Length: 298
Image (cartoon, one colour):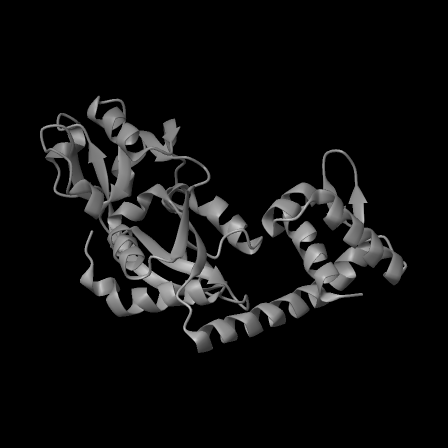
């Protein structure tokens, strides 16, 4: 058994695919398949169930995965320390971003970071918070920005980004537009435009309505903020959006009002998996954000 075989094993388990593992390691699929067969022969067990559609760990594979990961992480940690010693400002960072990230300073800071560290490659993936969480747990992303309910604060290492109150948006001719603030009871009979199910804001809003004693009448779900605003401007329904976004609406198209207590907040944070090795490039970015984040405004 050698370290290369364990690294290949961990990558196949991570991607649940020999071909995708081979792509991530920049080797041929036959090479990785041969290494896994040799490892299985040396251990005397079958590590993966294989068919034409998927690859899954066997019980024996599950049993050795954790130790194999620990060995791999230890080697990565050693490499990371060597990089730190040599002060190598290079590498690659995979970052997951929900579309709502525009309410933070992060997009501006990413540009400034790239100018200062041109040899660090940044790959951005724009998807909803739930998909980002899944990708972080599967180690497909290094870090991500998610909508963070209080019960998840113990799950990740994190850097808070923003805590922004949500406002109700509506057509200026809507009956609610004459009020100073909106109570939850005012919304019981309204038609809603919501973010899609894979967005953290979707669950945050629907759960708060459940606590208020009703289920929202949803007429449309979308991942596109502009489409949501256009639907509201057409008078088809109302929506809830962070106050920073509401500042950009033309008052003759859309009116926004605060929600009466209890307030509902969008809370975003940069998160990464607890206990996972953080690459030197990723650590440089996190340190850069901690130092400079307050100097960049959305």
